[in-house]
Length: 605
Image (cartoon, rainbow, N blue to C red; front, side, top):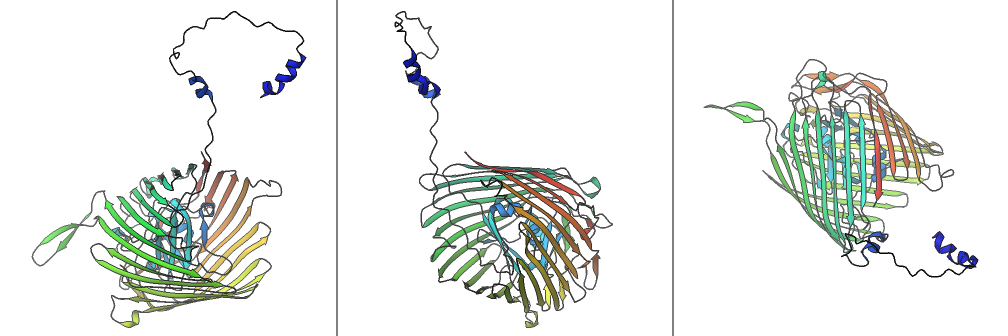
């Protein structure tokens, strides 16, 4: 460039005419002399940058209208990772009325109970309800086996009688390749690696794959090492209105034995794999289109590959041994369609499960969001758990500083002929906004219910009939000053005994979130820092027809720091930095001080 600019000025200054040289210097033969004349020029030429374009997105499942006073429990991809959540259980800890139960660190089984019932937390991944196929879990979802890292967005819908978690997997729309690498490490010899690749092609085709692997080794007196590998692959094609894609998701684990801190039985080790795959044909977008439809065929398989445990089964004539660890397969066919007009949305879904038994579970969903009024309703028939559920949530904001919410729900257990086991639920909240802070109070009420036990922790846990329960809730949410905010919640139950729930449970988070746009107007910097205090009183576990075991309460303080520079994010979380010694489940010690830090780096190439 300098020569091109200075060529004419320098030639103008040259006053001496130089005679052209007529002597040709012989050039020695080169090894590449037989190549085409322009081969060196082609080799040295700069590559032409391929123009990036955005293609029509692949179809995704319907996302419900999430209602709440002072917040909505909905996160996009960036917000989801910024929470510091490593499992679905970490997300559910933000909900009043949810009691999370974990028997250790990252690889340990994790369960969440809503209003004291572990069966009232349901998870939907890309429109497919995730049924727990592990026989050890007893039908209660093990949240540690769900690939949270593979998501594009997530939402938690709080009904009156259950919590539904909706997860939608990661998609790409750009023809330039999207690449991301996550690396994390921390205490208990924890190492985590993630890799993502995805791109779209000119004709609308899509190719994506991603993987996560982590391993961890607790102190010897708490068990042996564990590791887990998660895989995601997707191919597809999409136009403006139509989309076809096939996706496969796998989680394979090796979990070592988990030894209790106190006397008692350990949780045996397990080696297993869970496969979930589907093919989907979609028309239009459930979030934005006036009319949409989807047809989805999914298959799920649980495959146990470890050493099988045996138990003796006696009959009147013989005694045989059977395995407690078996493989399971279930197919799920989902047909859904919906419409949206003038703020009203209505959808219908037929969900057919095929396995050892067949279940047909039709459901209806409707919502209306316009002006100060918002209403959401959900109704579905019985599924594998023999429970049918319906609920409606209404929210009214008559002014900008007053917000009211009411919800009612009903659950019917078809296995019990007695109609008294039809359980009703009621929840209400009222919020008053002062400046940018919401002050919220509420009440929750549950009738008598049959509580499903999380037997993955202890096989002696039994199904227990529990009486009516009433709880009081309170919360403070919003911005205190500029980028400084707060999210504090507390709930108290007035009944006793309280199975799978604490009488007092609080979660208080103070945080700072800013991009410093005044100093760095490019937006290439971000900061989020938070400190979280959690308190829980004792929790009871039914271990027999009339027996129970009580786990004492605890309090912890944790911190999270995230710094973003362009496409790289440095993250550090320090859980329980005061070193509280506590348990959540029947004597299995929770981690003490746990550091976990790393970097997430996303770029286009």
